[in-house]
Amino acid sequence: MRTRITGLLGIRYPIVQGGLHFLALPELCGAVSNAGALGQLTAASFQTPEELREAIDRTRSLTDKPFGVNFSMGHRSLDGHLTAALEAGVRIYSFTGGNPEPMLKRLAGRDVCTMVLVAAVRQAQKAESLGVDAVIAVGFEGGGHIGRDDVTTLVLVPRVVDAIRIPVLASGGIGDARGFAAALALGAEGIEMGTRFVATRESPAHPAYKQALVEALETDTVIIERSIGRPGRALRGPWPERILALEKEGVAAEALLPLISGQVNRRAAREGDLEQGFVWAGQVTGLIQGVPTVAELIDGMVRGARGIIGGVNDLFDLNQGTRGAARSQ
Image 1 (cartoon, rainbow, N blue to C red):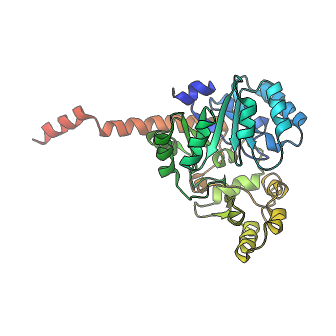
Image 2: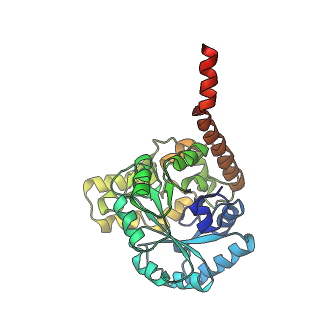
Image 3: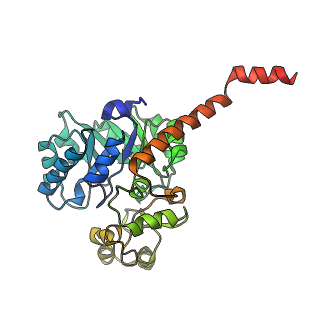
């Protein structure tokens, strides 16, 4: 496949693995890159810059293909992590949440590629003005932190495509060949997936998390953290319900923070305690039917999308239509 995204990132297929806190580690990142897509490490998953540097080295031992490092803004200062990634020669950087401008300024003038996750047209236009190479437009269906405007992927992606000149990746609600083909039809030049990559064999997510994604329906997610201005979609469960109850009561942010900390998320995502923690998940859970290898997932999506697009083209085959009309006479 050839789009501006494949050329920009140096990958075979325009598919990007999202930044998954505590999960976007070398084994998953390397598997995604080896399958022809773009794997990513998540800087915030590592306590120190040295740990990130070790993860970068480990990833390079697993793949000779391009991979990136994701920076989730707002958790804590990641300046040292950015320095470590630059010193290690990482070329691809993505930014999610918060304000990426200070870090983008540090990357200005360097031979690197930058992508920013956006959830609104105005954010995409701002990112373009800051000189990023591509944006990832995430719709309301997505897992993890999403936008405040509740705009779906089906509407957001073409709005963003029409508003900027740089390439757009679609994100949110995409987990199979149909979503991939649909994103391309909307004008996106690639896709980003998070939740779907959690339910793969190479993912370090706890088996209980993976099984919960397989069993969940599209209605089994809830949006938490709206009251503090950073809405995020999580898998329904006792802990998210507790958070929602407190938010409904109008408790202060300080009372919520211990319940939504990274360690509480890690307890569920990595240790499997879904009763005493929470995990992020998009509405794409309704489409997850199994836990394939990364290569099986990507290969199936690419082959399936090719077939879907070819089938749609057949619907508009004018010669075929003429032959049909002639036979009917």
